[in-house]
Length: 330
Image 1 (cartoon, rainbow, N blue to C red):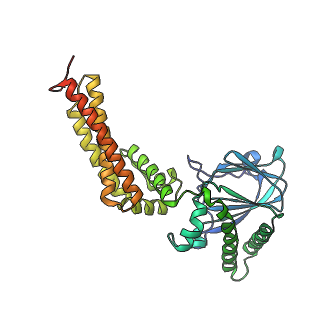
Image 2 (cartoon, one colour):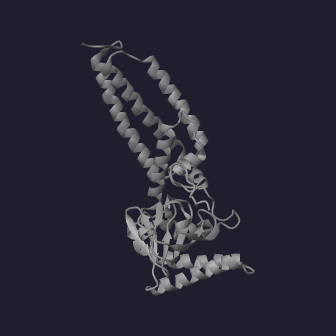
Image 3 (tube, rainbow, N blue to C red):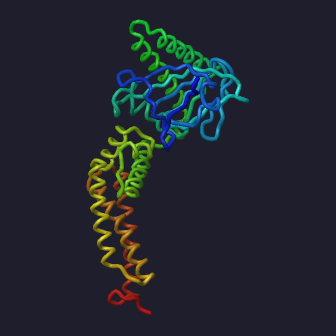
């Protein structure tokens, strides 16, 4: 019998979809001994995952922490969180896994339920996972509902889809309510969006001379393609394609300018090159200012322009003092 594998890309993002587009959740029953190496290798995905051990002890590795789970317990793993699983001494271990796309519960991105309930949880680095133990009364009720979801999915009675969705909404209502205790660790969404935008811009600016697919960019920032596009448009006022075209034009202009200004003098070449580098940052910030209405991003871009223009003046002052008609003064 062939061993099971988790198909991933070069970022360890799982490639296999979970459920269907019309019913984006699934339940699987797994045995660690069915996997190569008798363990599940590190991977991540955009779906929420709930693991329910059924036989033997399972050890889940999430970042630098290990979670030892036994039958009767459960572990909710947040989306986009790298994780792996093995058992002590590769002993036999079986478990059930519930995987669900978050929008199955919250509906449209930007809805009140997504924005007020799910977003503080899904985007909170302080909550990579939630351990569910039967010793906690509220967790015991959640575990019972998770077991019921598993039974409904396996037997598929009439209206099982609606019953499962209702149970999932109840479960996450309880979990999200409890997670509000971590609100002091939550980074506001606009700051998170700024960080994601910075990551996207860095990637686009670094790879602008290559063919960049939307999937590559989305994987780089650990977002779905849809959210990636919406976030970029919201923060910059333009599409990713439009930004790339404008940036490539900008780079062509600076490349031509740099070629025309080439010099054999190392010091002068450095000053000229750095001036162009700082000017590119100014030009990029001005592009963002043309389109964004976000107050924090506006302030961020204005700060870049102020600082970089100061550097440009210093470099130009050096060139004025140390060059004469393009020749370095010795």
